[in-house]
Length: 120
Image (cartoon, rainbow, N blue to C red; front, side):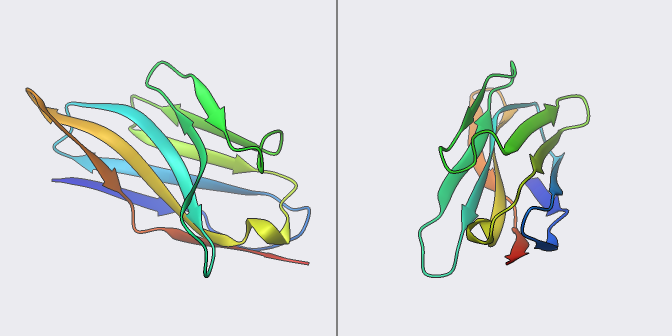
């Protein structure tokens, strides 16, 4: 069993910053791609940013230049530094990871989400 737990969400004024964390635990052999997704009320879940195990990163156009994704492979943690936040960044933010749990066994796992609310 694999668990992903997000933390760091909250209420912030426009222009402010937050740092999200995602901690992975359980029967983990290795963690491959990891990413942050978000879902605003009435909208589909969308990719915010993701990163490979070697550190390559990818960002959505909506957050490029404002958000930074990083990971600590040894600690099995994923981070999202969010700067210059806008009201349209308000959403539940989810961590997703592709985890290898054994020989020829891997799968995608999601966290439970953390709420980010940006006031204008």
